[in-house]
Image (cartoon, rainbow, N blue to C red):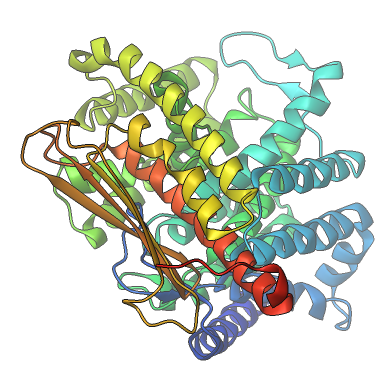
Length: 495
């Protein structure tokens, strides 16, 4: 127990110091999460990359075992596959998250790296080989072991990433998962898993000091994906060493909230025809705030309570027989159904409009794909405008305006393009303006006016326009850089 306490204390202190230093450097260097998207909950720029503190805090006591002579250290060093899997896999995932926080990584790159790491874990012996059945005999997976293991690792990584939407939420959810696995490992006498969990618990708490509402730093993808990776790997070890009739259900319950939120997001986006990896404000934490009118902090505390319930269920499953497991699962299913109904996920009154929304979103996605592709191929400001113009008819706009400017021009300067359709309705105007900016560099604005009687912009159209604005900002930045490098190739536009 002394080793566990020392590991916890070291990881806590390292995470505290690293998170504090990263916060100060992020503020100085402008590594901030901007509040320039409608899906953001925070209203001011917040430093990101706090996940560096979590990563450093977790690895610090484990690295110390290479230099300290102890019984626990000897056991740890004897587990070559465990060391390689956690250190190499964790470093790769943390590196991917760091790159995404700084530069932005597309879905293809993220999933390619995550699947590669998951395959590496499988090769090292992190495998789900038996699927337990509380109502009958267990199932040996055989050839299905590989795809299920890979999907579990990738799924948990992204589940933690998806739920990172409120101050202290992802860290708190991960902490409850860590607590569950620590208690299970302690009951089995698994010293190494206990050590890993106390190290991760200390790192999370050290970070939460700065991240609980109101947060002064975010963990970013560096932290959320790393937490998901470690919990996924440890969950496999927990299930493979469990002697209960519901081995795999124990880690599933331990991570019940992020898994449930991810499944709901997949079903919701599939039914409504939205891109599977698009962001929205329909997650469980968003609905708690909007439908139950809870404050930011209260919402997080309510979700902590739900995590506690999942944690107790996971521990109960560990000790329960088949009949008791069935009763526990039935009870938690009732709780989930009541929660989903309260949050409107089971509201059948709007089912008639789902197909209509799906068709509209499919058309909207096609429009956005063609517009962004044309924007990225544009060779001048005029061609950028030509690429954006189809939005006018596609969104039934009365006015579409695009203002673009170079860095040396003042805010009121630049080039203004405008398209008007007076016959696009005659009702009271709804005007929306989106900044065209990349990081902190403002390069223009999109102004859209509807006169079709709407009182607010459609949520899916809002998200689609943000994608277009991002593509325009990226291309304008490239054109400006090209103009600076080869000014003779640029033909100036007259206002």
